[in-house]
Image 1 (cartoon, helix red, strand yellow):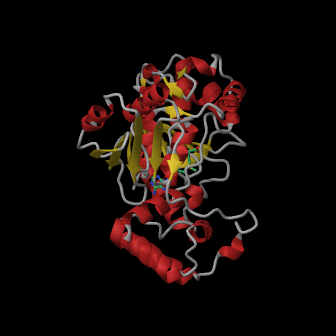
Image 2 (cartoon, helix red, strand yellow):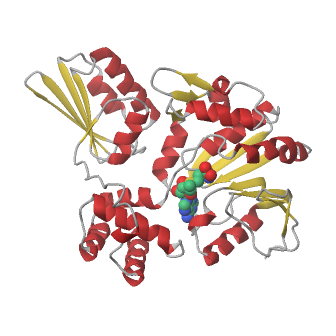
Length: 380
Ligand SMILES: C[S@@+](CC[C@H](N)C(=O)[O-])C[C@H]1O[C@@H](n2cnc3c(N)ncnc32)[C@H](O)[C@@H]1O
């Protein structure tokens, strides 16, 4: 993290670059905010996310100064939205244009599949992220919407900017990786896990669970809550992975917006929850924070399904709403990776519209749900 501070008239200005660079500690930042100033302004330059220590420091400053004398500036939509979710006021500079709902459709796509493929090859060569085997229609829509928001109608110019401007690519990457998630999403699925799958797995002395494409962590924490309610948390560990470092930092922070919590509590009850969901959070007027006893049972780290290998053996792998973005070739490769990563008698859980077609190594465990039991009949 690089911190530059200066005074102008009555105001102290602090500029922060690389706010998530863990190599350098944020002590410089804490030193700069330590005094009392007439006015204080902090600008996070190109930061996409912040670690929890800085978020907590910002809240102290909001409470100490009030909005008249303390301002936070952000330069990315990602950080600005995250702070707003946590009820931390901020002003986003370089705001991109909004697209109207009627623009948000197929007719924004003004480039061919070949042009898109060239862009994906370039992204792979320069940044190492391989989207070549993702569903092209999804990618097309996301790219067309980004071009419209950035008011960049010329595809060649857009492609050049993606290739040359790493920050621009990072913002596009966040959109391409689609991070929508929530606590106890599909409660009926969690009910089957609670009532049938986990009681079966309870015969194992230790449990290793892999939440694949974990996004901002809600799925992994939901599983931890469920295991706690079944008195199985102590003997379990949940590995939660994603290829998007920004959402992983959010997951690691464990801070969640207050407004979706009501729906989360309803879903938790529908899933058969025996405790009040609030038991698992420290709640203040900004956000709900996952309690440490739950957090320490979930390990988040970077893992890319297109390039990384198996890293452990699991009793349950949950991979919801990830395979739908892949073409059949990539889906097949990923299922192979899951087979290499599953304990015999382990389970694979997929999302509602995801399936294993004609795969003799798995049997469907429960009609109506994409829960599969691994048969372990000779792994390649
Ligand atoms: C829609 S979210 C699913 C979140 C969660 N599993 C759920 O069902 O609520 C899809 C996640 O898959 C991740 N993802 C996409 N491609 C990936 C890849 N190649 N390797 C690892 N994660 C990937 C995205 O970053 C995103 O966070």
